[in-house]
Length: 103
Image 1: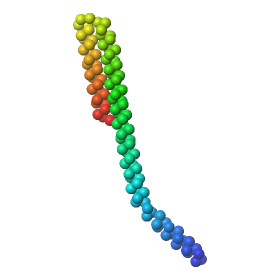
Image 2 (image 1 turned 30 degrees about the vertical axis):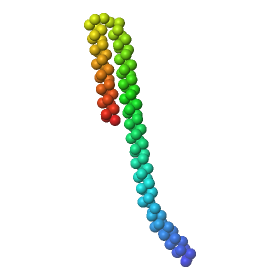
Image 3 (image 1 turned 180 degrees about the vertical axis):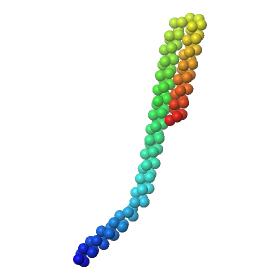
Image 4 (image 1 turned 90 degrees about the vertical axis):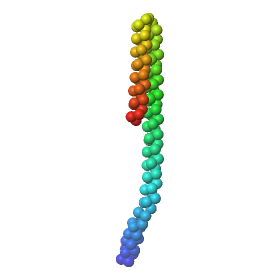
């Protein structure tokens, strides 16, 4: 019976001291969570920047194709075609900037 009492006391004492080191673990977990959040934010910024770069590159490619099509026209039709290509490029770049700002 005495042995049983000692075992119960040891188990109870070890249970009481088991949570003593939780505060440092929580602080470490908090720092890890902050690092993960920072890494995630950096990755999101990189993805947004890449999406912006892709949208601008696509818009500029479309612009050059439109200019090539405009070169086959003459007079007023050439001027209107070029104005349309210019405005389409400006609109696509503005949309890309707005999309980047929302992320």
